[in-house]
Length: 167
Image (cartoon, rainbow, N blue to C red; front, side):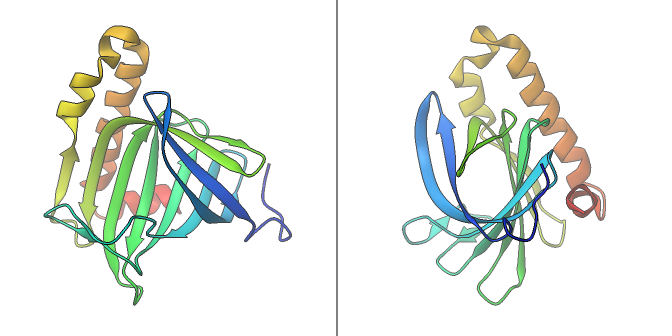
């Protein structure tokens, strides 16, 4: 399904599920849906500032988020309140599902960060992924998650790689 002009801009609830439970729910605006990839835009929905040490997410930041129905990841372009690009935060997830006004995404613990200038590309939360037990309970999903992280890292380490994925 592709977004027609009447659907573009409509509100959606992004529902991030982890371990079978809703981790976070926030409202976003539908930007595009080509039937495979869904793009939404949302302000930072956290309470206050979240400082990772390598980037800070704070009130006023705007996330343009890309979810795929056929890929095991989501890519979030992060901009500050003045529109300056901070970088891309990538979540390893099961393929997204859009049902009515809910975009449901299951987080698989692995993440990737790429700074705006490309000098900082880092894999995140590999310890949480190992502790999740997914490799034992669902080896196929665990393998897909690791392959997705490797794929995103390959995009992130070449100039224009993530941008080409989102074009």
